[in-house]
Image 1 (tube, rainbow over the protein chains, first blue to last red):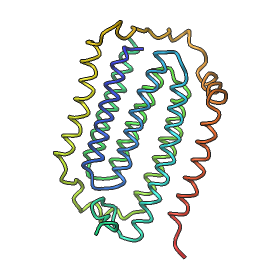
Image 2: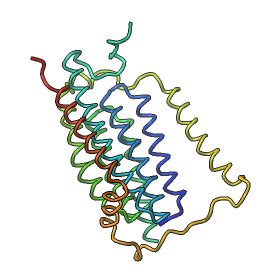
Image 3: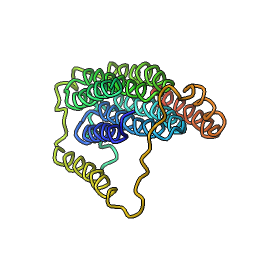
Image 4: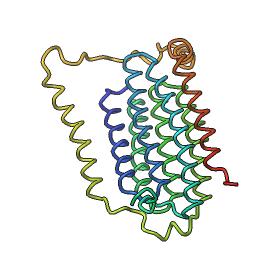
Length: 100
Length: 172
């Protein structure tokens, strides 16, 4: 494998792009997709260190993160569908039912 | 050498498609670019000799989660959403957050050279042809050391499934 810094920088780049997506986009679906990208960046870190130390635990953690991402996507998209049925919008700044 | 070529190939695809995913106006295009980013990450996993995660990434992420995303994009009204402004006016906040994150990591890299003591031990990973079988070792670790977290994750998935069904169901 390459020196660990390569993987760390790739992971950092993907993480920052994901954060920018979460902050700048109005569409909630794209925000959720950016969160998936962030989780993916973390997985790269875990697998790279698992390879470096020759310990498979990092890959097991990455599996748990993938399971988490699946659960989060299912619940998040369920919320989006329920909200769209009520308010006919998927834009984050029009979701102001709890604001007064 | 081959390792290097593979890494830069997949890393380039991943970063470029991630940038395109965040910047495209059309949500379907964003989803497609996210799929290519995830596939490139799967390639990185393979380059790191994590065979099992490579397959899981493709089957579960690209085949499962992304199909779910595309379904929901089709369910919500696409034509109305396309004509609205897609970007919140938070460019400066985003720039600030990104710079803060990058600065933090840069500080970490800079200060790790200045730590007292021995510093980080320089490790070299074992050669690829002397690694044990990947799926087998993952299975041993998952079902022996991490059995309880595995069961908790399955309960979490069950809860998420029920929650998604309840929320997406039509009110009667």
